[in-house]
Length: 528
Image (cartoon, rainbow, N blue to C red; front, side, top):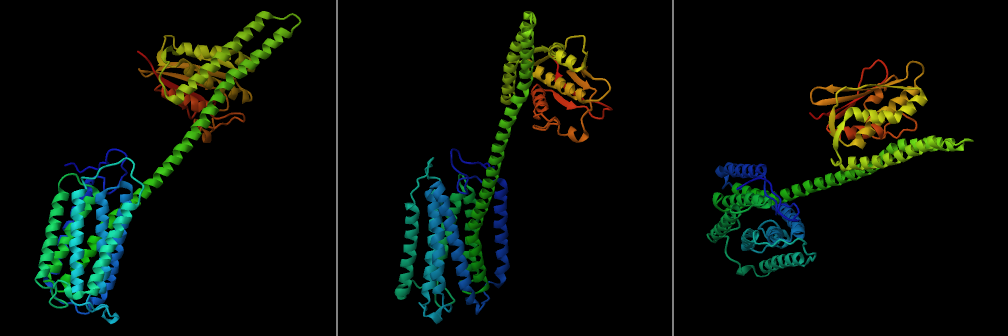
């Protein structure tokens, strides 16, 4: 049988009652059982030593049992409200029944509340203890039988009637038993021969409880086990040790060392499921907090992505739109002359049409980036890509007095990629240095493009300029979204370029430690 954790199929939530125990949890439970079994041996040599005057501790013990078992029942009812398992409802009734009976058990204990007129005889406490012990054992056995017979529903009913009915029936049983003990104590079975010593009849109660626990243990060990089943096994082991200490090791002598040791084991057994449920509740709250935090981060990331998409589109479309405006103004000037130069105006209009188509291709390219799609890729010659981009920038470079120099490989270098995206990358890397050298005062105004084979399977494209370069403080952030050193910049161009190159299996970086100017380089896998 596999011990790995496994969530149940379907929409069932993660609960102690429907999740498989991990190997770590199983080993931990075995260790606890072994430690408890070994610890009881320490009480054996002193088990029948009477500890007179310790009955004053019983109210505190009973209050602790009442509190622990009622809280456990409440948490199990909360589990039932989610899972709607009849077995879990029965188990919650077991803990509620045992917890509520701890109160009349303490009230009727000889010598504890006699001063308040609550002396109901020797048999009252033992009778309540017998009903409490056997009732809990029977209900736990019912849980073990029912746990694998529960039907699973995708939508649990919202009615609270089963919970109210269960609590009402348990409360009624406890009330009737308490009334019977107080109103007619003379008819109760003779479990005690004195206020401290049990009769032979009590041994049947202990033996029956042990048989019920053994049967429950065998059922829980067979078949599929949940985390709740695992800790119930530890509870049954602990309760069995309690019975052995109370009824056999101590000889049934009340307020002896063995008897008090058994009571301690009873309190430990009552706390085990409570601690497991509290641990689960804490873990679920932590998971919920983490899920909320993660959802917030995802939402913020989506908003940032939408902002980045909008800014990227605006940034990339700005170049062809600016070119269209420039060509439109030029065409208007050609046509406004006394002798309109139709050919020049027609060339400008054709450039406008070309730029309009380029803007459409840019939008499509950006959409493909955010979809991370590999469609519309083809075999491309790097040298041809560079030349196509330079042809578009020649006029702007001449107008601003910038020299565009190229050093391209003679042999064709083929890559697989999206033509529009790669052209836009090269265009961005050329536009930035043209702006940079325009800001430089004095010296050469040169932008160089180089292509060369980088290792055997890569081609490298470099764009270098003689501008002011990139400040060291800016070099680490230059590829971040919305980071820009230009007053009118949007900080999307280089982020766009890196995203495109990386989606093509390459790498884009800024060359550092240059004496002057900036150098951007990117590599792409070449096709042999």
